[in-house]
Image (cartoon, rainbow, N blue to C red; front, side, top):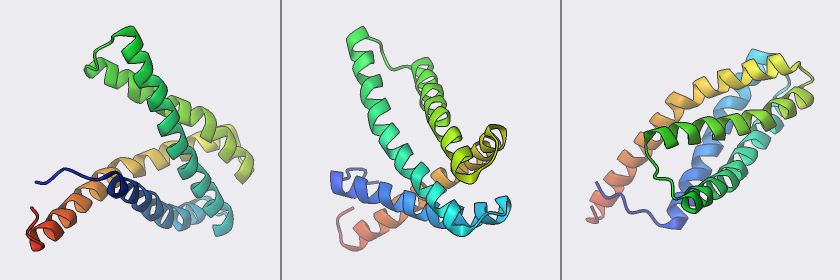
Amino acid sequence: MNVHKTLLERVLQAIGFELLAILICTPLLAWIMDKPMVDMGVATVAIAVLALLWNVVFNGVFDRLLRRLAIVRNAWVRVLHALLFEGGLVAVAVPLVAWWLQISLCQAFLLDIGVLLFFLPYTYAYHWLYDVVRERMLASRGLA
């Protein structure tokens, strides 16, 4: 499988990932939470943008810290990375969602857990399907 992707392709893949997630999550969460589509749309777009920004900032700081402390990225460091990344995102997103949707912090936290449970299989499926479609397109052009 041809795994080399340009920066532009990676950006477009990430944008596609977020846009499809917004299109799926907005009506689903509006229905589950019995909230207007516009309110849920704003919340899902805000969280998507927040997640993208947090990803860039957190990973930049985390990688610099690893280099500075000469820490090897092993399985335990990856677990720590995932916990700190998600913990930081929850710490910012939950109060924002609670405020925007006028729900309690507990309800916003439960909503966040539900969204996380959606994103685990969604992430797997999106990237797998993207790679399959990409590989077929490359093969049809004789580039794979």
